[in-house]
Image (spheres, rainbow, N blue to C red):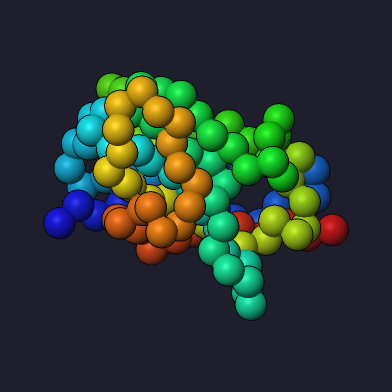
Amino acid sequence: QVQLVESGGGSVQAGGSLKLSCVASVSLGNSVCMGWFRQAPGKEREGVAARGRDGRTTYADSVTGRFTISKDSASNILYLHMNSLKPEETAMYYCAAASCRYGVSPPLRVADYAIWGQGTQVTVSS
């Protein structure tokens, strides 16, 4: 069973930046789609950004232009660079993996992802 471990969360003031990392217990290469999701207290989990098998990306409208998902092929680490953070983006952030077809835009639906990490907390203060 593949395990995903997130890190990089923390506390930051509004307008600040954070970089989240996700490491898989085994090398996934380009065999799956990978995504970042978040869940605030009392709210449903939502998709933030995803990376497809061919490197194409999908972003939630609310983060487009501020967040960037990327992957270091050498180390097999998935990143989420977050800039201009807002207090309403305080949440637990999760990394996830999904089976998907090569050459299509990666999904942002929670239901499409089968493997999840434990999450890393991001707190944005005003």
